[in-house]
Length: 264
Image (cartoon, rainbow, N blue to C red):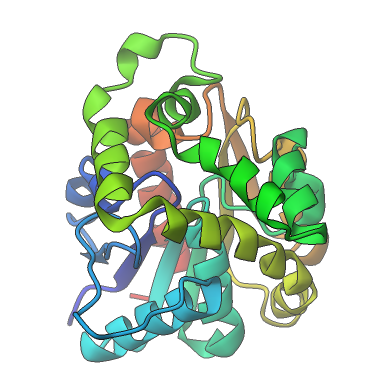
């Protein structure tokens, strides 16, 4: 019998490389796939192809990827941008989803901190100047900050992940990232569909959260229980990229959760 599949979806300023320690842990019992989202990691667009970077298209690409891999049922791990991609997969294909692990992957408006102020302004008034204000989120300094903010011992953060993330932005283009930051507001408009999915299907859900995240607050983790009362919520004393400091904790929690949640 084939092992159940777990689909790992990374977020902004990251790639499948963020799962370098988690994959061997999960692979002891599960079939693990971890694609780079379009616009990140090692992805590229074929010459002559006009690709619009928005979350609908990112989700369509990942859905096509699962079909190409003949993966018809899977658990999802969503982080940051991986969440709106995963939420679309779940809403559009509810019977494919066996379980959900959200590591700082938001699905409720109360989970958005004041760190989204510039984005909210740009969503409300998408002027050239408001768009330009988002460029700073793609600097090397800001990307490093997102990895280290909220982490008590920053020596635990290896430099390679944020360095590779910045190099990918430089290679693929900052404009791509600004397009996605502007489009993120569309995800909030789709939250009602997500909440209906949770209420109707009650998927096994584990929200495991870096509680010092400057972008996604603990309230966003607790909110999963509103529509899915059996959802489990755990907090880790770390920042946004919790997996960089607590990969062993996350891996152990996921194995325990998946072992009792996913049909063998």
